Length: 506
Image 1 (cartoon, rainbow, N blue to C red):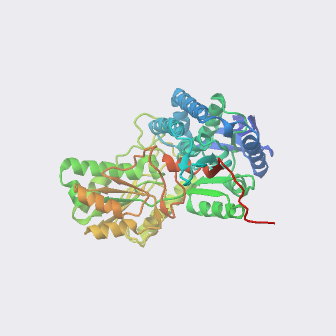
Image 2: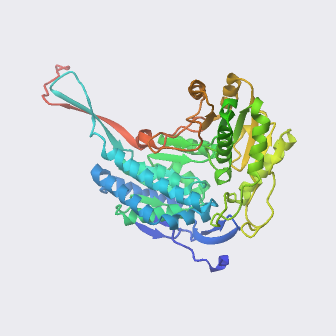
Image 3: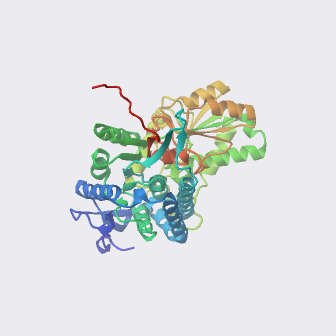
């Protein structure tokens, strides 16, 4: 690994079809969270770079060909991008692993999902009718509702799924005919930078896709308030999301927010009546809580289990959690990587400490692991942690930890299970485990969460909308609603036989 002084800064700001350094000349080291060593150096943009990028996107929208490009041609370009992603799958998957700390296999799966998103939105727009005809009650009037691109889109993406979350915004924005400026997380920008290169290779006109690498308090804040931006789409934490909405309000631009979650995973005893059912529910509870070290907005971080099976369920869960192999994501056999940064690990540690002070019982984890060849002492590793005997008043139950921490609550009745699951400010996702189909439908119908999985956890479909209730946000991604976020609706009323109205006789 090269020392940071040997790293060469890359021109990672792309404006008007050209790669460039930051106006200020500033750079940022990108650290590998597995060993805390820098492995890339990127441009550190600020408000001046943002203004240049927005101006380029504005020109490309107002004067360029992309908004007026036929839908079939836009769809064809998105499919070419998907093909390029498949071509570069291994390289991009490993880069995602090293940048974000996830396992290489998770990185590869992410790239597959990114390609699927581009193909889905290509197929969606290609299959649409040109407009919805409205009956005006007269054969002399042709009335139609059509969709048009919003304009310049400011896309602000998070650090946990860098390329996947970017694709959920970029693919529908392009399919609808918009131009955009994207700001990836300053911690994990590398695969989004690579995607801009693939868009250019696929033939996207200059100025349509722009990227500014830099921090949220400068680049992101300027994007949200910029009068030249027509829409801002933000995925991230609640506090930052509120700031984005406030910054966008004076210009009354469209705002889409996908924020946090504190997601319940409700396990009824009947789901564990057989050994196979029990093993599956435990396995999926581990998956729900600990994939990508729990750094997932939809993580099933709250296990709400029926009291009659709680002791056995938690004991087996803790036993298996202790066996999860931590290490560098590119190492064979590693099941869980590090947290993304030292700051994130310190945040997780503080939550666990507060939970123990408030009466939680530690069943496993709760500390940094011992160093190993695949797990350097300098890396940001933290053991998968199970906290039993938790209750709603605990911070660790109420607030989003975003780490490998699973809390356990219990219930006796169906009504109590629903009440516990809904007792949160968030409403992003949740799971229900039961062998009773009627109960499954009842509970799923009563949960106030944007996605509810029954006897499963974490799968998503490009065709289905993704979003939440309450403080989980106001935006919708994926599915037809995800495309609708990036469109305006226009009613075109054509009088085929105009006659004088003569309201005024003057």
